[in-house]
Image (cartoon, rainbow, N blue to C red; front, side, top):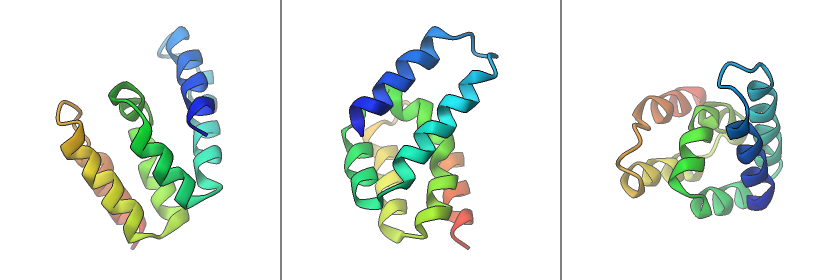
Length: 99
């Protein structure tokens, strides 16, 4: 799961930021992570700061699928692990997606 996500991020980084395929690639990451909450959490905890920055916009979609306090706790912990990334808006969106 981790290597698949890293490969997709590498493809995204090779594209222009406004390339419409960027969203398709991010959707693919969502599909990969949404298949198994436990593996998704384990994988997210292994990803580097750059990759977390890229996938943070997916947190609400994943929270909606998982409906899990453990997932929320995982992404909240990322805020402390990677203080240079402003994750608050994505975390708040994920919390709202669980309501």
